[in-house]
Length: 69
Image (cartoon, rainbow, N blue to C red; front, side, top):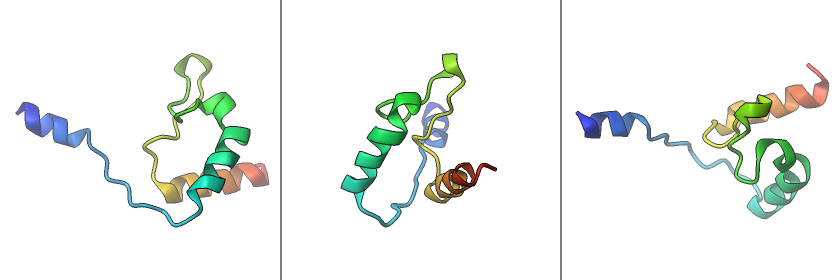
């Protein structure tokens, strides 16, 4: 039972195409101050985690944020 519970915690997120080095530079400049160096957010400041989210979800959210919606 413990192994079954443990396996439910594993998230397999497919790799999204792109330039990882450029993405890291953008993240460090634009996102890390709030979402943290590793993307786990900050519950105390009500900043959601980015780590573990699906790539397409994050892409939609960033596009909506950029549009102001």
